[in-house]
Amino acid sequence: MGSLSIWHWLIVLAIALLLFGRGKIPELMGDVAKGIKSFKKGMNDDEDTTAQTTTSRTVEHKADETK
Image (cartoon, rainbow, N blue to C red; front, top):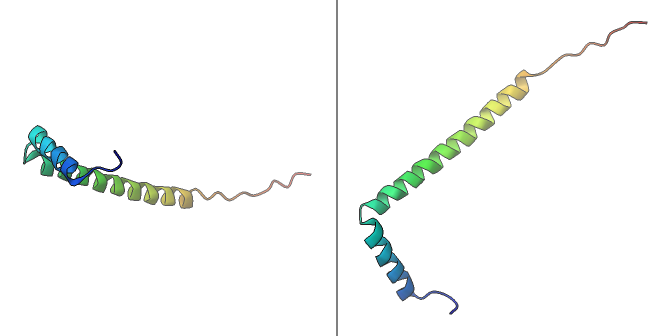
């Protein structure tokens, strides 16, 4: 009962093809790929805006000389 044999994987594949159909699986994988690309783009955009906001928020402080 350790690992799954090739027959187990073929049965799982056959059931997946019956449930989703031949055309649905590539469409699903395309949607997953688009999601990953948009996630990476969002992460890069977030890093760019973080870098811009940290450099633009430099504040010069002058000490008051009241005696």
